[in-house]
Image (cartoon, rainbow, N blue to C red):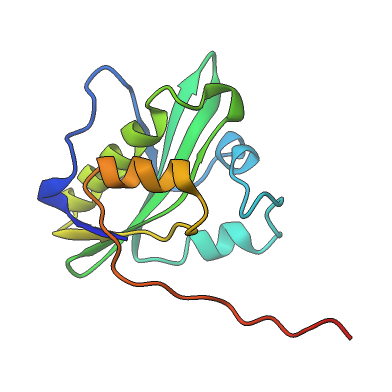
Length: 146
């Protein structure tokens, strides 16, 4: 999905999104790629972009929503958005998405992209509300088991 930065709502001034240059332990503890723990190489890969930021929303000293943004040229890429299961449906996903897009804009991005699975209806609805539209689809080919 893609969006023009101008189409993404401004960050909610009542929700504090902390932006850090690298993911902290609580950020890494919350993020799950496809529901799985991250492999040891993941932090190194997430740090590989020339400019990136790791956003988090904290409650009672722990991360309850996280996301990553990177910028290359006029494009921002939002990845690794995760909201703690006990804190979903409270606007945290929209808050972190808006804050990451605003950070990308401050670093020259005019458009932003993200990937979301076609079957993830709650996330897709969130991103549509944030101004994103489908750009294209893709799929992975997996070898059949032996």
